[in-house]
Length: 103
Image (cartoon, rainbow, N blue to C red; front, side, top):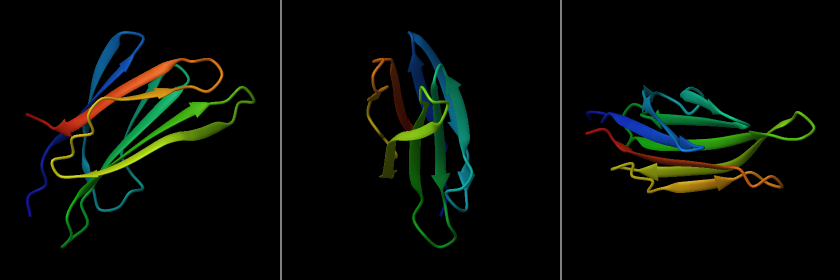
């Protein structure tokens, strides 16, 4: 099965960045993008002999310096997440992303 090309558009403070997402055999790898206190990780998981799926996680740096997972989304083909907005607790900063098959 051919694995499609997937990308994510990350929007933080009005600045948009396109992140290409490469296929991995498990969910441990992925493309990371840092934006302010946020870290976004996107992985296209394509195990042998199984249907691929997209995992997108957003982490945020807490006031105590700890990094916490604040959003996780798993989607199947066509990997279209729609526009997702993640709000940082307490401070209200927003990171938005939209992922899908690259055109």
